[in-house]
Image (cartoon, rainbow, N blue to C red):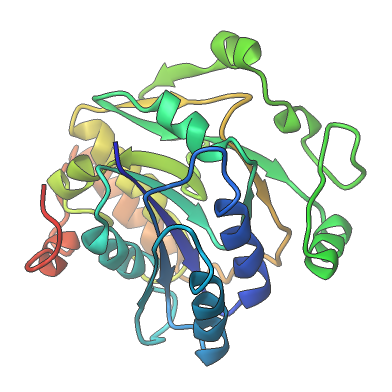
Length: 267
């Protein structure tokens, strides 16, 4: 199956460079990489072009004008452009363990979406990684805040991975789903503006559509660089939108990916 890796970004080219480079040294490469850019400056575009020129897989830059935090819009535009059957979604401050794509392929199942494993790096370790432009994190590395998540094990993954229909703990910084399922619920809800809850609302509609959540433990490892907390001024409004979707069991959002599909890949 064809895998489209989508990496979101906004004006942090140093982290994006490391994320892209980690994606290009995978045991199994994605079919393509799409950078979903929420309005970064020209220096980010230069970074992407420089890496793409030497990359072994296509790297597409899906850019939109900076009109504030519009992550749902940015992701929808990238998914619309994707040529893959299966979408693996990460943030631009995520570094991928070399088996990341391989593990996501193995975890993919019809009727399911996947939550991968996130390893949190503290501020000091993140600064060192950005300075040295490399990461060698393990269970014993100082600065890894949830050390057990550094362990990659097929045995432990088989024992501790699970299916559920709950929303708690959903984080689309390491998330995977079938492109057709995303289109069936009209993608991310663009009524969400500003940080917060757009990932939970997207997940709620996937569940209402009949899909199950697969939580993959000890596989599909993603290392999350430290960053300051995002502006939460829109959180109250976004919480209301999420509650409405849950209470009314919505599967479809009015303003979503459908507006970008004309002339794009439709499957």
